[in-house]
Image 1 (cartoon, rainbow, N blue to C red):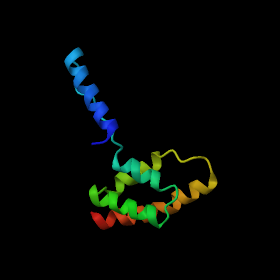
Image 2: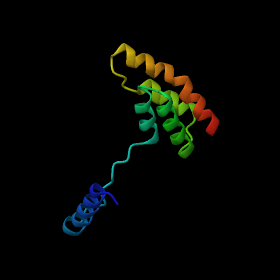
Image 3: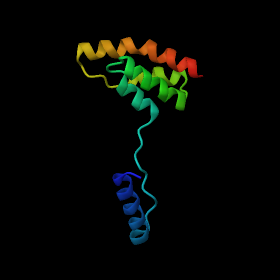
Length: 98
């Protein structure tokens, strides 16, 4: 168990005992968020990572398209171009896993 997780769990136990609060939710980025961050470069290593992610959690094309349209891509032409070039590759990887 990682140190940050150990600290969060200890804090969670303490808060529940002392304050009677509900369990704290530990932040875990959604698979779709991880995929979107990888798309800014979309080199072969990133595409392998994306393929691994969609194997773990298959995502329908509609959900990916919605995420693509809502993504905040930096206003840098090179990054936008890479992101847009990665779209069909990511959709193709996701289609293989459905």
